[in-house]
Image (cartoon, rainbow, N blue to C red; front, side, top):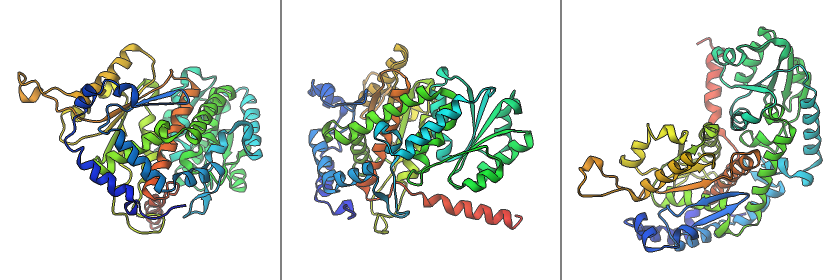
Length: 467
């Protein structure tokens, strides 16, 4: 697999020269001069539809980016990912999260774990509330899925990540120890924040604990009645699909969670088989790389037009920035080019009344992804109107300068066929594959996160020193 710098690739040099021809291109003129652009610059996969006609690029741009992907050895890297070979070299591990949603093709250990999760979830008689204690990938994914599909729940769930006592107190408001199940999620069972909350739950009087961990002895000593495994070959931010998602699994039911897995599996198949020009997550990666490395955009907004998806930007912040926020390549050499942009965002319609002012008239260009879940005509109309306003703007000379919009600000619209579990699974898997593809392009390890370790060590040293 290729681990040379992308800047050594012939395609990189060609794209850099090509980008100069796009410095003054206008998105509005592209749409006006090519009536077929809106239909041509679209990709569909696993029920999702990506409209990238408002991006500042053309067919030649995409062809050159695809050539770069080929020179990076993308097909070899993709095969390694999907076959469970090592793609995380600093930890010498696979990143085989796709195996967790492979259905009948899944490894036996995955099928066994799913079977046990189903038995446990069906046996929760008398449990009225589930409280998930985890942090990072042990919190964001399950919290998002439960929040997005909460209307279809069969039990109530709460999620606690912060060791601030107010977080746990809020999750336990109105709960009773006899009818509350705590799910403690920590692969090593040494995560300081999670264990602090678990001990606080004991002081509250908790009686029911299930752990998700590979440290079975420590979890049993703590008092967990059941310990579900988390495979070593699954990183935290990709662990939603494993037993780390048990709180959402039990709250939504095995059937609903199965639909989530099926949607992700649909996207895995699309990612593995669709040609690059029609491969939805690959196109998302190529477009993002174009914006970051060749148009100089260092930030990216994610704007879901659905209240149920309001937690999506936070989940994607971790997925993108913890995966690809790296400064050295596979060979340990410092990078001479940018990697992950700063990812941020919020629920679309409310955010129109806050930071959209900067998106439309600020001094920096922020590419955006509008997520249209197809829930309501008003929401869909607002998403599309915002995308058009960013792209087209208005330079009407009759307007005073403060009323004019420069336009020419790129965005994509990612449309879902409603907000069911299957569509949500496909959406989350698409973003995972986008992040992986960009890691290949940038020649970085997308599956380690050494940058978080120093701060944790210093905090532990301060606590030990009494400061």
